[in-house]
Image 1 (cartoon, rainbow, N blue to C red):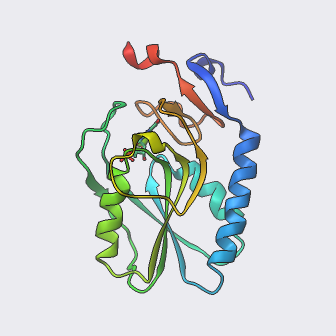
Image 2: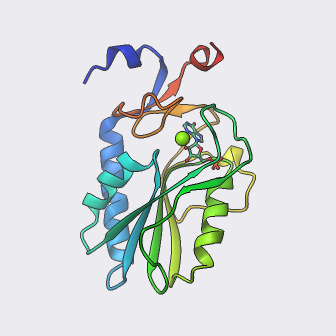
Length: 184
Ligand code: IMP
Ligand code: MG
C-alpha cells in the first residue's frame, strides 16, 4: 500500500507489514500456550501500542480481557523528558489477575519500570511485558520484556502505532524517520 506523503519522510523500512504479521502471530501463539487456564488481562499502553494490541489480541486463542492505560514520558519530541505521569488509569481491578502489559517499544525502560512498579503494588497474580520493539542499547532502567518482537537499532522509528508528533501511527510498517523531519 502507498502512503506517499508519509513514505517520503521515511529513511528506510526496518520491518515490513508481512514480517510484522508473522511475528505477532507467533507471539500470540506463544502467549496462548503460556496463559492457558489463567485470567489474562492485556493492558495496552496508549497510544503507541494500539495497533500492536489490536493484532496481538486476535492472534491469542484463549479468553483474554483488555484494558487501557496512558502514561507519558516523552511529550511530543524524540528525547525522554524523564517525567512519567499517569494520564489515564485502568478501569478494572487487577488484584489476583494475570497482567500482560502490551507496549510498542522498550527504549530507556523508564516508562515500563515506573508502570510495573505501580501495577505490582495492586497485587496482580503475575505481571509480564510484551513489547513489539526492543531498543536494548538505550536501556537505563533495569527492566526486560518477557516477549518481544524485534530488536531495533538506536534510531527513531515510526509506524504501526509509533509516532513522531502524533503523526505516522497509521503507516502499516516500521520505518526509520529521516532525521531532517525532526531537526526542522
Ligand atoms: P522509554 O520510557 O524510554 O522506554 O520510552 C517508551 C516510550 O517512548 C514508548 O512507549 C514510545 O511511545 C516512545 N518511544 C521511544 N522510542 C521511540 C521511537 O523510536 N519512536 C517512537 N516512539 C518512541
Ligand atoms: Mg509515543
